[in-house]
Length: 65
Image (cartoon, rainbow, N blue to C red):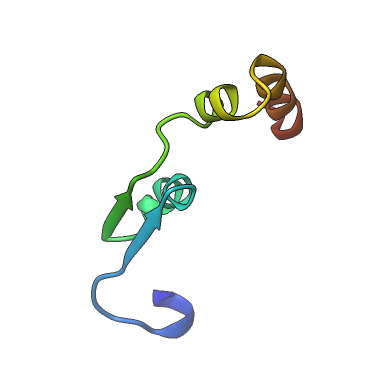
């Protein structure tokens, strides 16, 4: 944003819930990060809310983790 748009000043990003995961990956490019009610471990969410261990296996297979 600084290079392409010529913005000056501090740049911050805000991520909530699933957006918190993306926000933490972008934090090296910004000056300020706010993560609100994010998930600490996406695999735990899949295990508890969806198909259990089989859902975690599908997630790992689909994301190549």
